[in-house]
Every structure is written in structure tokens, then in C-alpha cells.
Image 1 (tube, rainbow, N blue to C red):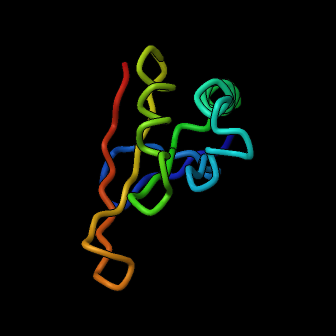
Image 2: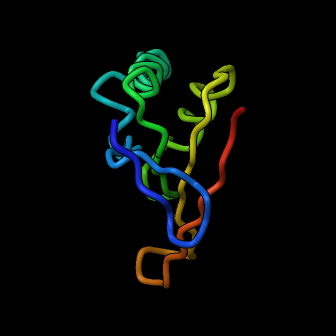
Length: 97
């Protein structure tokens, strides 16, 4: 996996990210297990940048459960705003060792 420095920070972000927009899939009953498997696979491949947003359905909750017991370092980005028409600000929070 290739990494890039995030702006003027010392954070090394993977060039490929895991997007949280379509984590629910076709079967909501399998969403949590599928998300956990997807996150574990992404982390195993060296992806350490995960993106989510309030407009991505249950993405934040699903990712929260999937990442709750990982020991891998990752960077989680989200957007905030009142609705899709307002200014979107990206927040990046780093977790892990």
C-alpha cells in the first residue's frame, strides 16, 4: 500500500480509502457482519483511511461496531453539516497504536 502525508501533519494516509456510503448492502440483517469483514479485509491490505458521513445511512454506527476491537491504526474522516446543501467540513480523527 502506498501512503501520502496529509497536508502539513505527520499523518500517513493510505492512497486508497474505504468509503462508507454503501455498507448496508442488500440485506440489512447481514450489514454488521459484512461491514466487520470488509473493514478487517481493508485493514489487512493496509488501508488506514476510512470515510463516512451523516448522509451514508447507518455507516457511522456500522463502522463504529466494526472498528471497536481493532488494534490497527486508522484515520476516520466524516463530514458535518445541517443538510446536503450546507458547507461540508471534513474532520479526520486518528485512532490506534
